[in-house]
Image (cartoon, rainbow, N blue to C red; front, side):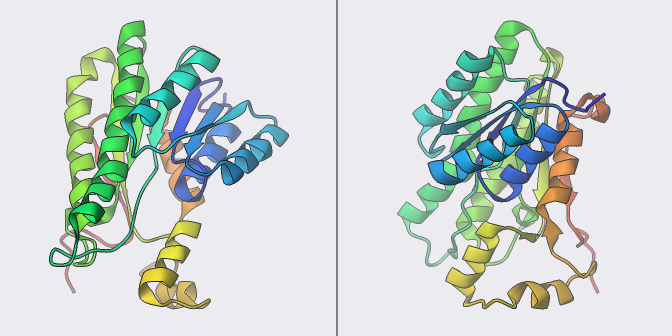
Length: 258
């Protein structure tokens, strides 16, 4: 049997990168898939792709920085399918800022997308699970940088570290409701968004991926499809009773020194 057979899976920030990879992997495992994002063009294109492959899929235009839109996206999926069985919070903002040059506006943008959006999306999903007395699963896409990160990631790290703490808190609060909530600290990953970030903030050219890969132990950047398979496992019953875990999905070892 498919890992997510007929489960309703909501992927917040699911129109590109890791989120889109999760949507594809969930569809392959038999899920009914709903993806949200700010831009309708890639969202509708992804849904068309999933439907062509035989999946039941929908797109809800959503800016998770607005709590009302975040919660409305959940309401739209509930209206269409009656429930959400699994949630993946994959939306993210990775713009740069240090402790010294981050403006209040930049800080607030990171908190809005990387912490507040997942909070209120998760609130709406878990509230419905509890009301239905139904089990469910949540996976928050975090970052290995939440352990500290580079100096130019100050507001990003602040918000994502908050999401790691929220993951543990919510998992503890709702374990007796049989709602399992876990997080994945992904390392340096090859995505469309990372390509844009490298070009905008670090002056990268077309060869940046190959040069970056050469500096990494496994000789490659993290791959979105590999991360997606792991997230689907965490969403599924195959992962058993695990909850409250924030798992480092990276090729560098926390605390390891050369």
